[in-house]
Image 1 (spheres, rainbow, N blue to C red):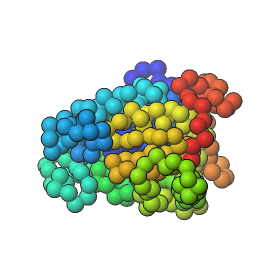
Image 2: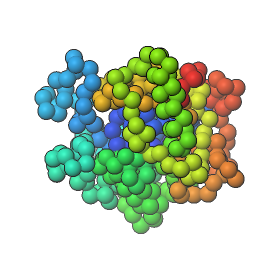
Image 3: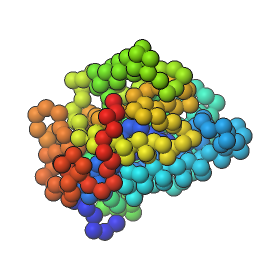
Amino acid sequence: MTDLPGRRLLLVHAHPDDESINNGATMAKYAAEGALVTLVTCTLGEEGEVIPPGLAHLAADRDDALGGHRVGELAAAMKELGVTDHRFLGGAGRYRDSGMMGAPQNERPHCFWRADVDEAAAYLVEVIREVRPQVLVTYDPHGGYGHPDHVQAHRVAMRAVELAAEKAFRRDLGEPHEIAKVYWNCVPRSVAEEGFARLREAAAAGAAVPFPGVAALDDVPGVVPDEEVTAAPRTAPYVAAKAAAMRAHATQVVVDGHFFALSNELSQPLFADEFYRLVRGRAGGPGREDDLFAGLGLPGPDFTGPDGGAGGAGAGAGEGAC
């Protein structure tokens, strides 16, 4: 890839929809600001549960055609976020969705959970050496909530960071590149608690709760003590783009106002603010960073966003979501 933008962000996710739920506003923000935002998705999400009754035939236990359908959903979501560089690890279908932890699908030889970490990491090394990101975002070692593909995505991403910088490793994959900063997705406990408190208050006041039940705090991936959060980019002005991207994943997510639900039909807050933990590299200063590229001495954003700050085309006005 030639003529790379000055700022380059790489995100590594397990299935289509994970990126929009976890980082949709962040991706929209940086794409709008002129950064190169690259998404690598590790599986097609073939084992996901299908929400719309009319698409139930796509499920793995019927036509087993969900993966191909979710490729289209991901493309639509990326259009909503303004992201033009999205890829599947090793090519679409290289690794199959492993299902939930302990499921029989974990034993399939071609599932992502069974992949050799170094072999899978080599596919990501090739991407890293091509787009040469300064910043990488992925999950924590628990994968946010313990799904085997999320755990494996963490392992592969962190190993690829190491291998991409090694001068002696696979020079056929490109020139070595060291990623300056690595972040893990997270949600401050206070933010999660506040979001669910508003949801319960709305229900108690007789407001129409859009889904049959309410999720628990433990259903939110990556909740951590507030003091562990090191970065909070200004993502709230991009929540409309995030919500639109989530809606694009229609087989997996239903969005209603400031809330969303997965196939369990349990309402969760749709978080406009997105948070991160810096686990590799140096922070850009004291306190929480408001820019994932802080401290790297790179050119600033190319545009002015909807809040009067950094940003630009493709960003949606804030909806007042949690």
